[in-house]
Image 1: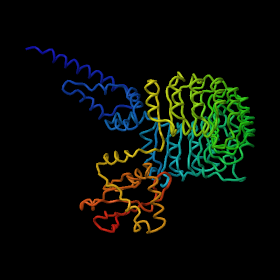
Image 2: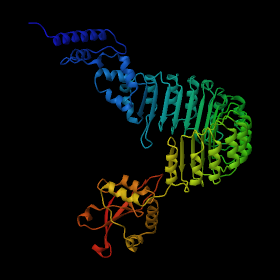
Image 3: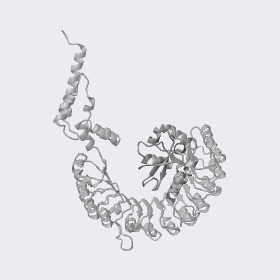
Image 4: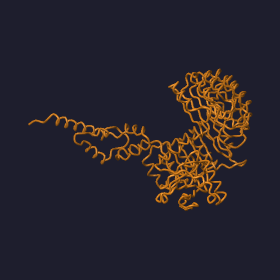
Amino acid sequence: MGQSVSAVKLRSRRDWDHRQRSKMKSTALICPMQAEEAEDLERSSIDGSSDFISGLPDECLACIFQSLSPGDRKRCSLVCRRWLVIEGQSRHRLSLNAQSDLHPLIPSIFSRFDAVTKLALKCDRRSVSIGDEALVVISERCRNLTRLKLRACRDLTDAGMSAFAKNCRSLKKLSCGSCTFGAKGMNAVLDNCPALEELSVKRLRGITDGAAAEPIGPGVAAAALKTICLKDLYNGQCFGPLIIGAKNLKSLKLFRCSGDWDKLFPLIVERVTGLVEIHMERIQVSDVGLWALSNCSNLEILHLVKTPECTNVGLEAVAEKCKLLRKLHIDGWKANRIGDQGLIAVSKSCPNLQELVLIGVNPTKLSLEMLASNCLNLERLALCGSDTVGDAEISCIAVKCLALKKLCIKSCPVSDHGMEAIASGCPNLIKVKVKKCRGVTSECADWLRAIRGSLAVNLDIGEQLDASASDVGAQDNGVEFPPVVAGQIGDPSIASSSTGRSASFNFLGLLSGRSFVACTLRSYSYPILEFEEHNSDALVRCPQCLVSNSSVTWMARQVSFGCLLVSSRVEAWCVSDRRDSGAGSKKPVKTF
């Protein structure tokens, strides 16, 4: 006779959904609704349940997408057409594989992602990269681009960079590495991008070396530049006009750039007076250059890394005039030209020092006590590769450095006795890291954690390898490895094949004790083979010999070690157990 209460509620709920969909159809915040999407909304109410996500405005969905990881964003774009459009139009950062086959796809890519302002184009060094035509098309599609990163785009020339710079005048940050365009392309960017604030150049191969090198800068971008980073340049001094003309420059970073920088630094500090951060690593600079840089009275961060011509005299000059210094990193490269004298000058003149990193420097208790007493804001201290930092120095730090929060000790003659002083000192210490200090044991680290529960203690005893590590690895792989028979390794039939083979095998055995060869061979092996480190050798069960129940030793031969990995080919052969073959037979197998 009458309708039930649930039926009335269901009908009122559907009416509310209908009104909400009518409002959405009349509003297009990002893009107009498509007819097919409208039909999907009409079917959104099924069995009395509504799709409230469809009622969210496009702007809300865009904010949600921007909070997701790149992988989650890609998955969300596959949900429906509406999400696909919103995700594309709300994406501002994009990274593309810049190989040559990207060129025909550029129009469709940037039709979907038409709001990109930060673009990264990265190419594999072994592949052919995009050329000038592709870069020009990108610049025409992304005229609002503010950040561009180029990696190994070796087919880009000065002409392509010039056309790009004319189309993307809003560029604020440019980072290029392993590219082949030269000074003309870089000058085109500096002349057409007045908003450029950050410039990072690494291995720009188009810059010629010698006196014939074309100077770079300053251009209209010099007035806005705040950060310049130059790495691995044969003639980094050709950027001298740009650095000198950047009057608002705050950060200057020079890494492995050839040339005599002592001649350029006086010209730089004469024009650029607001430098706050200076990084120098493996460049030709001496106390003359440091004396010039000491005129940067606003300097707060200074990194001197592997500059052996810099001594205590130069550091004293910097400390006396740069009283706002907050962070100081020194890698003395074991040259022993910076020590107590320079550090005492820093302690006397730089009371605001918060972070001090000393690598290959030999401070004593005298300078460390001065630093702890005068630099009351010292919060982060790292002492690495120092022969003079022992228990007495660590005890001094524990008593004097009251504001210290993080302490790192690496490759120093420190023992448990010195670490015990930390238990009652440094009241604000929250983290201590000890690495490759043979005198510090794990028992001391456990005791320190128990005494100070809030202190994070990170102990790395170095390259010492427990014999049980191999056993654990064997169990994890689910394979039982037979022990190595001494006669097999020293068998003349194996070692006498060639001198090079024997040397390679001995070197392999030496490194395998550090879990290096085992991991490398495992990554380069066939799926059917499983390697493991065992008694300084790479061992595996041969699938063929496994059937006949004979023990097998797999030995790597002719291993070429590249940069931290096996980069060439590895040949292996199977040596059956002597009990089966008597003299030991070799069964050649595949090369992998």
